[in-house]
Length: 462
Image (tube, rainbow, N blue to C red; front, side):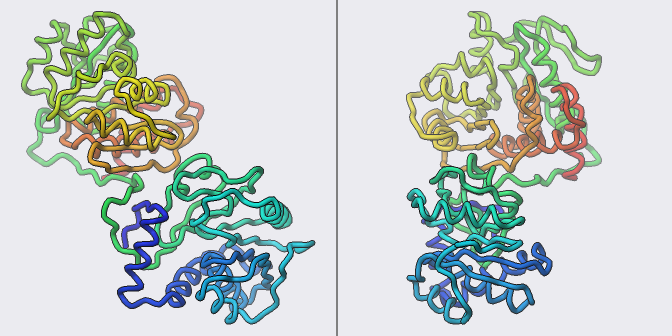
């Protein structure tokens, strides 16, 4: 089982079909999926009364199996099913339930509400009747659990297909993660997320969830150059580059050098190179270069960006560098990571003449058009590669919405690239370390305080 893959509805259907072709029956697979969900619900419900809302498809069939399992566990269970089951597996599951089924929510109350109305296949807005039903049932129960994907949410995009949808305490993903589980606005309604395995194999081309990276301590014969030399280019606002240097020092590189004529705010442990930038970049020991934090947008800043793009084989472009970047400046054969926020992403999409609906589609289109790896940062960060790979970030503390947070992320990313990671992997590792550093920093925090927690986040991966 691949527990970090994220599947579209079509990919999930194909994965299930592969299980059928391997000998699993639809009824058997439903018993496995719903049985796993029922075990989670048993732990959460802890003997409380349960109401299961069942729809007409296999998600509703899962609901009938869950209800039967919970009855066997000793819970008081009632089912609401406004539509008769339509699939063969769902019909079989209802027959095995064998108990009473209410067709209307009426005044039904209970302690735990389980939503099995539509699941991940839904792609049209909820009817007014169904929207009212699910809201009313959710309001009358203290604990709310969704199975696979809550009703009213589009699985592939995370879009809301109804108004005033209820918030759930827990969502139990069946078989594999779906994009909605990790994408706003849907993610905000799902509560805690749990994965119920059903034996789905690795799906070629699937997106993945960014998880804790596996990092190593330096080998016994390591020295600062073998661990990687990261260069950070300063600009008109030196504090941002210094902040990126500080983060980079805590993220694994053995040597971090600031290439700047201004050493304002520089700590004693940050090496400064004041020589003309082309000369500084000619140092063959440099493994990766970051430019953008505090760069400015003047002609001089544009010249510094051009020098980096000409000299560096591995680079991270952030902040002002993204505003100055031209479509013909990215040379093929070079490893470039761009780290735009939404405004910068929009600028880059105009620069490279690409369109897309939402951060994920835009990031992927931009990566393919530009040849850069794109880390489209935000409350649901996406990393996209030119070859079509996609990775989604788990939620990070909202305290990251502070000035300088992006400079810290860029510093971590350049450190990981200098340490030998390819751009896509460096971006994923940086995103995870950035979020973990935030979790380890007392809130509210400044970006400088955040950078000091990067080392602790790194240590958690050893």
